[in-house]
Length: 432
Ligand SMILES: Cc1ncc(COP(=O)(O)O)c(C=O)c1O
Image (tube, rainbow, N blue to C red; front, side):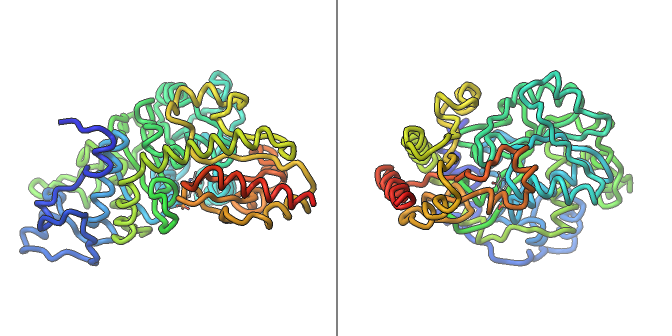
C-alpha cells in the first residue's frame, strides 16, 4: 500500500517488530556490530548480505532516517551525513573526482558560494557560476565537455530565487549530466525535486527538515535512474577489488554491484568511509523526531513568512522585500508552479536607512533570535552580508544580489502578530 506523505514522515523505514517492539526508533549508540560468525563477517564485507559494519559507515538509527527521507522525496536511497556541507562536498567530489566542472548559479548559501569559488579548484573541480539560469539557450553554452552536473538551490538562500527544475533537468539530461538540487529551503514537504527530473537531492537537515535548531546533519537522496554508464562517470563503473564477486574473483564497479543507488553507495563506501563526516545516532534520532512534525511546522512557517513579507512590503522603512510568495516578486510565477504550498519560510528585505540605523534596528529586536540558522521553530533574523554571506567580496555580493542593507528572516512558529510587533518596535527605535 502506498502511503501518503504525512504517514511516511512518521512511519517510513521503521518496523517495531525488528526493534524489540520499540514504538519510537531506538538510538543505536554503538560504534560497531558483532558478527554472528566468520561467514556473516565474510558476507557483510562481500556486500551479499545487508547489515551493519561500523557506525562511521552505517548505523540502524541513521538508516531509518535515510529510508524515511528517501521515501518522502521519492528516491531509491538516501545517505545521512554529519552536515549539509558534507552532503554538498561529498556529492561534488563523487561527481567530478579527478577533475571536472559543475555548472551553478550565483544564488547560493554563502558557504557554498565561497567554497565553490575558492576551495574546490584546488581539487581540480571548477564551479562555473552562470548568470544565465533564466535563459536556457544561453545557459546551454555554459555546459562544457567536462561539466559533470548542474547544481542549484531549489529556492535560494537568502534571496528566494526559484530554480526552474524541469527546464534544468531537460538541459542536464540532454548533455548526459545529473541535476543536483539543494532542497534545504524547500524541504520534501514543499517540493520533491525528483518529480521534476532532479537526480540528486541534498539537504542540510540542520534547517527545517529537523526544525528545532538542535543538531547539524545532512542528507543526499538519489533518484535512482540516472544513466551513470554514459561514459562521463568512470568512477562508478571501474572495477573495484573491494566489490569483487567472491566466487569468481571478478572485480565489479559500483553501478554493477548496487544498480539501484550506485551514487550514494559510492559516497558511503568511499567518502564517508575515508573522509568520515558521519552522522551520529543521537542526531539522527533528533532529526527523526523533527521530521514527525515537518508538514505541520513548515505549513505554519510558510503562513508566517507570507504575513511578515506582506507587512514588510508596506513598511515605509523597507526598500524592497524578496519572498517568492509575494505577487511583486520576480519568482512568483515559478514559485506557484514548484511550491504550491508556499515557497519556504525564509525571506529578505532591504532596510531603508543608514548602516547605523540598521544596526540599531537589529540591536532593538527583542523576540526574534539574532543568529545564522534557518528553519528553526523560532523566528530568526540576521544581517546576511556581514554573517552568512560575509565570506563574499563586495563584487561577489553584488553578483549574488546581496546588497549591504539585506536583512534575512526565517519565520518560526510563534504568533505572527508577536513577530510583526517585534519588528515594528525595532523600526521605531532605529529611527528615534
Ligand atoms: C541552502 C543551504 N545548504 C547547505 C547549508 C549547509 O548546511 P550545514 O550547516 O548543515 O552544514 C546551508 C547552511 O546554512 C544552507 O543554507
